[in-house]
Image (cartoon, rainbow, N blue to C red; front, side, top):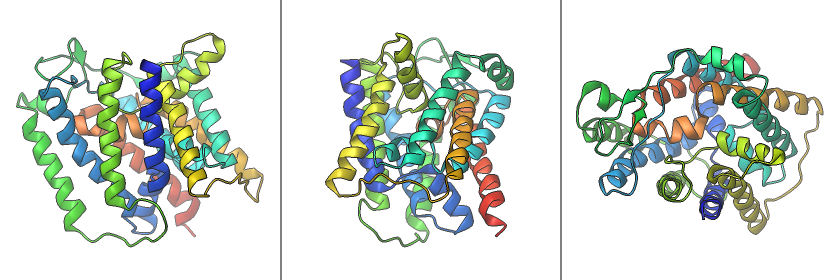
Length: 333
């Protein structure tokens, strides 16, 4: 049941990503280089909805909030490496994953090396290096209530010893003011608009939290890195996890969506050196995601709504790393 629900959740997410052209690399980079906030607003809207949706689901007893740990060194170093990797790979973790389903050969290589280096960072020859880079890991005893039992990562609410609804409502209100109270860049093309994309992505995030908690033994919303690791571990006899099935579902969902809209096409770059660049980018994505304990989906889209200090810090350095590399590669021109 876990693999099946992960697969279905992934297919839905793959359709949303493909039809919404939702890539965090593009959202972050375009905001800086072109002052284009179209995709950025889709991301912010999704996070705002999840910030209210997750505690609501926990209050109803459907899930228990499980924020990521706080690793100040790892979140900064891993965030920067992941931010660099996004630009070099031509996409974030979710971006290269859904684009593999569209037939983009550079995304194939980026995804493969992302998974390989994430696996090596988690279980292989890079594990000692990544453990050193992560530095101290901070968790706290769960205050109970809507939070998971045992040890959890600290959040704004747990640090201030206040009801988690207070910072959640304030944070969501700020994001919603920005999303609907400021001018949005115009963008044509087919597919979902930014509002539809943000809403649907958030709803799939809620579905992921429920299905992974009840059927996948995971107790967390959407993620990508652990899924690629699970897929690669199956080659050595491991069992496919809920998250691994979810990642396969993203590829399948994006493929079906691209096929239905006649957007599927095997595409290769004009300059073969682009393959070298995306391989390096994919490797940095894998190392950075494991070092920061999550990628743009696990930390940014799923972690920030928890208002977890670790996810907030890692996401900040995802953005900074992306901007630094984007400026180095394109902005100076």
